Amino acid sequence: MVKIGFPRVNLGNAALPILALLLLALLALTYYTPPKPAYAGLEVKDLPNLLVEAMQGLNHSTRLLSSAVSGSRANASDHVRRMETVAALLSDADELPELRDSELGEQLRKAAASYAHAASAAARIASAAEGVSAASYELREFLEGVRRCDFLKARESAPALQRWLREALADVGKALTHLAEVDEEALLSDGHKEVYYRAAEHVSRIAKVLGNLLAAAELVQLANASALEEACLGRPAHFGPDAVEMSLRLKPSESGEFGYEIALLKSYVLGGCERCPGSGPGQQGVGGGAGWGEPQGDD
Image (cartoon, rainbow, N blue to C red; front, side, top):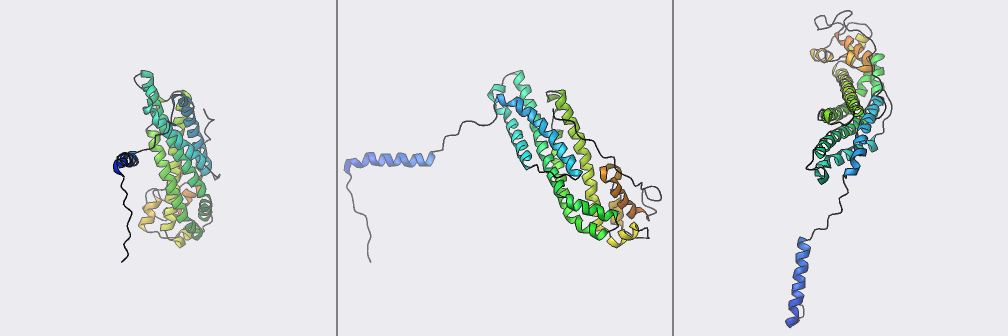
């Protein structure tokens, strides 16, 4: 066996300072943490612009969602990221030493917290707009199938439509949660309050529209397609209790511009159900939805 060793070196007294240096180096490597960079987050001078940007972003997001529901394409990824950044910056207001120990500072911290929620809501609303926009093809195919008694076509579109609508509704739900956390008394102008009230009302209404579309897609997937086509053509058709129960969830008056198709679908299932609540001749009025107007300009 070949032994491999290291030559012995007699360091004598010179070894002491060398060992001390090695020990110090080891300790430095063990406990060293890089110096923190200079704080690059929120500064007091940034607050006014960020507060305005949060409300402008909320108004813009509401417009995006309205347009997406009406069929326009929404590419909001950059806007979502910016609103998330604005929300994060405003959430740091509690850490600013300049806002401590004064009544004005307390008011600004409360305001920043509410505007942070508004910016978070804006991010989620814009994300919902992207989801609705992504579902535009499936939605067109689904609605056309309902109008033309082609329920095989409507059923083919239903699974993807449900997936997009569920994601959009999840975002809308989070947005409404953030909006509920906004203290309107902490908002710094009447214009900002108007943007907030309008967004809360608008998004709540669109949530009902999306919920009705989701319920309609679920109904088409659950009910017998042949029975739906027979009913659509004015022929006798039979539907199971689950389909009847689900059809009762449809509310054409809360379905916006899709109220016509929602009313048609509901009438197909309930038209021959004599004991169903709200069924019978003339009870399932078919007509266009009320829709909604465009939000006003940015503040």
